[in-house]
Length: 452
Ligand code: MG
Image 1 (spheres, protein in one colour):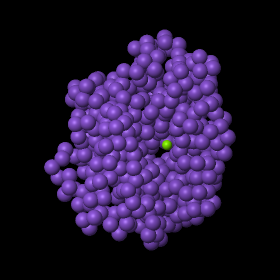
Image 2 (image 1 turned 135 degrees about the vertical axis):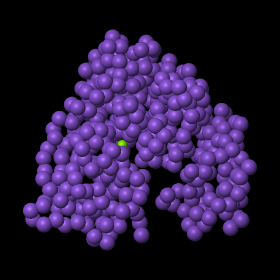
Image 3 (image 1 turned 90 degrees about the vertical axis):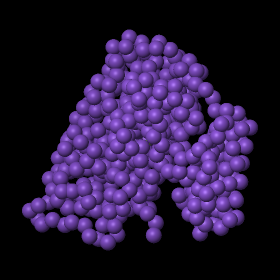
Image 4 (image 1 turned 45 degrees about the horizontal axis):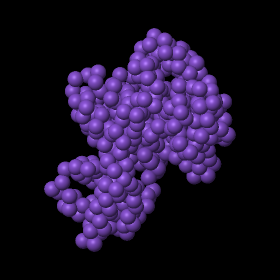
């Protein structure tokens, strides 16, 4: 049976694989598992947002949960409000960076973090077996709106940065809101930080007429052009639910996520002795370099933001991040937060009085290679056991597939979640070395398959 929950919640195509019935059933199951109590709900600008929020609200109320409706908000804003409003959980209607025809649901626990796998499994079980709670007529939940959460969220982000320094720098920033909820926060936040803000794609529109919601370089050509043509210091682009921020320098170059993460990490990790940095095993050498230079310890996790968030709390980490540009700043909250990430970057540029391209230029450069190795579906799991034997003498991390460290770089071998193959990802100081390490990984996987 296919699992409903993927890496970040349940996603599907609108009125197709993601039906109103599915969403209201999931809401009933969520209310049963997380309730009784209050549940906060929010949505991004996607098509079907009102329809699915209505289904979520109905489902939750029928289980006796009270519902606080925050309306249109970024996912990190809802996450921030859940504990603040004393909620037992939250439900965000979003499909994050997926194409426009998708929508979905992220389920949050009382701490605002997406619920762990175990809770997702419980929710799925209740959904499939129909064991949801139904309360009597006099115990149906209450419903009210909380329209001020964006204001509260912006105020708290400002408390985490040196507002005066940022204002003094008088930076010009182009914000690309992806026609979604980041538009409600980042332009306003930046103006209040004293920046001159030029906004684009900041009218909410679920058809995403400006660009696709994933902030990849190929989707940000208009932003790059705008930054150059107005002579801005910086461009900032969010994904559909604004938990991520991608940066463009004044020359119009789009930074890789690991570069912006490294720039922020190299400053934040120095603020505490014995800092802990939490990052998935897919993160590269750049992050390791930055952590080492700051005397910080790296806590590796499985790939996925939910694992990073929970680990941050467990080890009281200073910072978390992913190579896709997701930055988790625990003094604010232990989840990815696009607006917080933007504010941190502006603070660094302002305090050091340096353009972004200069901050990037001092980062070491690494090269990577990716490959797919077909593995018969029935052997996909068994390959791991053999790989563990084959790499037993190497320096490695085995949380999620096998990551082996060599002098010249590293190679990560992971089974695909959906296809009959293993993925191989290598990184080194030269392209040639990266290619060789990737080949070493491919050979190891093939050897493991042959032994089965
Ligand atoms: Mg997102």
